[in-house]
Image (cartoon, rainbow, N blue to C red; front, side, top):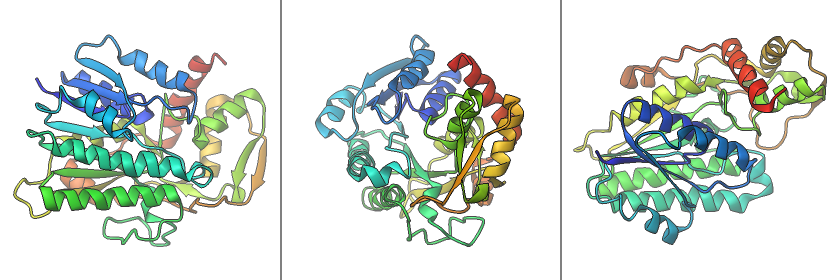
Length: 327
């Protein structure tokens, strides 16, 4: 059975996608650079849950390093039929501090993966991660696939939108079948430490203050990891028609149920059994006041149907965090 290549396999979403593919009997080659944007020990811990499982192999490689990537994939590309490209430099605020990392990982890295896909003669489908950030500070909600998405307010968002446009061009010119997935604030166990829900939980359990913005009014379409993974696999199994003039599709993967940061804090307090100490500050550069996914097309085409409410998802996360951090 040909291997599915999954980039970002040690990342939050990537590790879950690999596990789900293995659960259904797929062969997976995972690649990841294991960079130090956040503690690599967490990435290693995610990998340990996968290593030793039947059908999984891992190679450490940076997708932005074209030569290293070609070497790492040389033996699998001839038979590769599917790629799930999730590797990227994440984080809106970090893109203001270290813009070159986003150009390197998100632009060069995505371009390199498109080139690798072209070298795979049997490739049937490339699924890649985009972001709700591409919608910018749109006041029209919910965010629809019909929206222009041409006014990003962070470099991170600009790189993800640029990736979409690169993919469209490769789909049209080379008939490379692709699906881009715009993720909306994904959370859950084994999540990223730079995300608000993770930082809030850590601080509340340690008895230190949390920092909220604009009185906790900003809203996010928090989407539980299991719902996201179901959407990724459903998209992977449904490539665009091979005879389409432009075999490329985009989908929103969100929860269609935005909640305020105040609601998030309340859910974390309930799960932790402790009250937060809050410090309120102005909204930082690059952040948007609200995200909300219109998932009508995803429901129709993918059968996508998120089910996990915020309070339940946070309860599961806090239980995991207490065990992982031993608190």
